[in-house]
Image 1: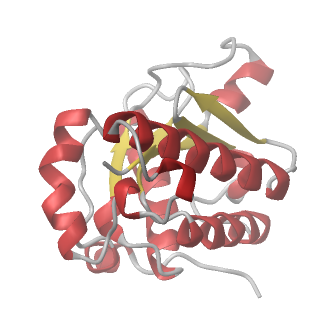
Image 2: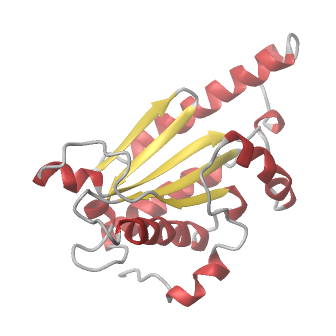
Image 3: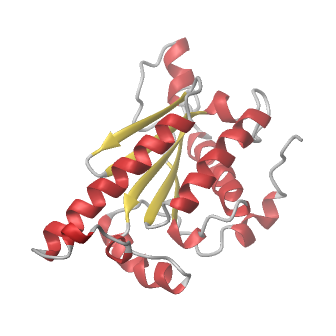
Length: 206
């Protein structure tokens, strides 16, 4: 069944609790009480192997984070082997790159059937690995000049609304539209298709 984003004037209801700012370390620290109050949990609250019961707490927490995020990366990678979708590791962070045409209708600003299927898969994994914050960032290509920020923010919000509808805790979310900044490909015909994207960056909640 084809998915359709709810009316724009209802998005604030679905995204209540989300932050509309970059997911900096300072922003995550400030958001932690809200996250915990909404039922979130931290990496240190995850069941750890008995071998980590002794020793330095910081080292143990770091080891748990690395293992937790590595398992998250593997599950996302195995589940998202589709054109236009990639999973990358950046330190302990995991980044899912969703090229616009892989998740949205070609000429309409809405999630496509394939995109809904992909986001459903991501939602299931995010529910399992819930000791994470996520930044949902939209990007356009350099051709979209005056409306770049609005278009990129629209894409990010549509993805966030879908995740919210799928039961993802919005207190985990940071939502931003970055326009044509941070291109990951050349600004030619093929590269522009790649630069139009939504990135979901996952960070361990500490």
